Amino acid sequence: MMPAFRAVLFAACILFGGAGCAVAQNLPVHVDPGARDDMIDPIAVPALRFLTTPDFPPFNYADAAGRLAGFNVDLADAICARLEARCTIQAWPWNRVQDALADNQGDALIAGLDIDGSAAERFDFSRIYLQLPARFVTQKPVAPGFDPLSLTGTVAVREGSAHAELAQRTLGRAEIVFYGSEFEALDAVAAGEADAFFGDAARASFWLNENPDCCGFAGEAYFRPDLFGAGLAVAVPAGLDNVRVAINWALTRLQREGRIDEIYLRWFPVSFY
Image (cartoon, rainbow, N blue to C red):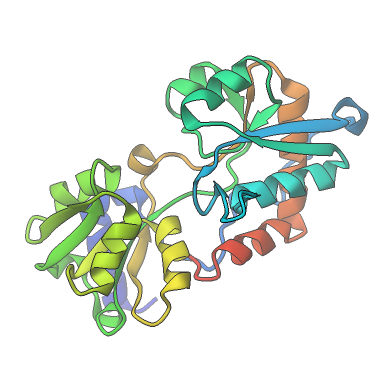
């Protein structure tokens, strides 16, 4: 890394949270492929009933035909295949899915549940399989020389998000403009109504794949588990250790075999790392 670039990155890391900042990478590696193997008996998990929600694109959502789709849906299928377990995936409304898991309507929940929130008191969690950094997005001509420390224009954010809170706190020279969703905020950048977007990198990557000509990621990825969450993991009912251990076993092998990378690139060909 060139010294000047390192200095800019160091300054940006101070601005956005010190040790929480990391250099962007092409592919995520959150399941250690060299991790110690868990001991499992596949016969003990002959079937897995996954629960999810239909409203969290691009991770889990109902497509135009009403079919469940998304990164999490494909990962759940891959976990079942690796375990050679019969698999079902059922969608529940977000405000009911946690109770459904607690009431034994399913064996595992894969829907972006916050592992640091109140759910931690109700459920156990698998290994983290994906972290979600924040990124800036600008129009393409601006991206190569982008410097968040000198940003003085308008920054589009999703209202009520942790990203909006961080932008308000740290981008004192910029005007923060609020939108109802990440996609609306990104559309504003594409239309020239905002100079930059700051928010969830995964949603931005999904949008960039559909809008490849106008815009791109600018600057580095920002990892702030204290603000953006520790990452995505599979929730299981408390004490259901055979299922949790089996899912961890499958995640480790899927990482070793490159299957998680394949699923990631299928849904995020514009890598958000």
